[in-house]
Image (cartoon, rainbow, N blue to C red; front, side, top):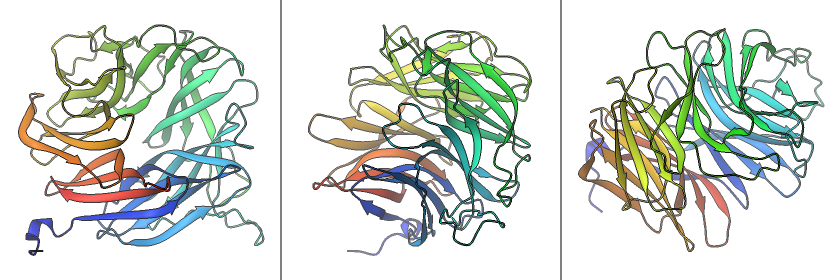
Length: 405
């Protein structure tokens, strides 16, 4: 009950959108340090709607917008669009939850107060509270975009494509002109696609695709993920083909040769951190084990396993969800300990050498914090944690916590 030290006064642990089936997806730290934008999904057996929550620096909710549509809409990723201080949200749309493949890849936009942008010329009786833009329509070749990157004037999205609804799955990169569509114009619904880069390898399914800006001036962006072999029925054949990524040195260039990181062990990709020291840190877990790993590697742009160092542990959970870098250059890893009875979440701090720092680990017990989705570091080594919380009655909530770590 003693007063908190001054450097811990910003700490909080809050719940939002408590429901039977709410899903935490992503969050944005506002660039002016005035709070956070949380993105989630509010689901039922018949429908799913995207929600946007505006939160202050103290964790207090300012507003919540539920974007009601008659379709089944799910957000999958959110990014800050620095050019106009807005938030772009990538999502999937189905006509109903039973639909096998998504029908459209969609994009919505909000301001930094979490208010969705709505076209000026919509009818007043229109109940849809956001202007939706269509990135990809799945008519003949189902495409599922899972993550994106903004490099104005381009929006670069990564995902997978099937040549037919039941056909082989290949990776794909699609590049759009972000300036081609106005969110204030209801008639302007489709983004212009500049380029599409399918991967020629059949059954090459990356289930944890992420895209990041390049780590050197010569690389525009990199696509990372976990390659597995999959047949047309979605069945996995064999083990993961290591943690890998595609590197693009030119926006208009074709897909370059993939780089493989890791070992020949069956690995599941968790997250990657492009560190300010010029190294890459790749984290994940070995499939069907209690072992997680952290790979530290000098950036080479070629050569697969040259100069990599791998640390493994069985003491701190069995699934990696997120990585970030603190003020001192240490690496913070968020882990989940999945068990048959319950799930716990953990934090672990590593040095830049890729070694765990003694007594710098934290396990959340009996807090409902069972599923960390994302972590971000703020000035002063303040860690912001987005989580999915589940309670004894199976109701769920989006959690946001801010702690000194």
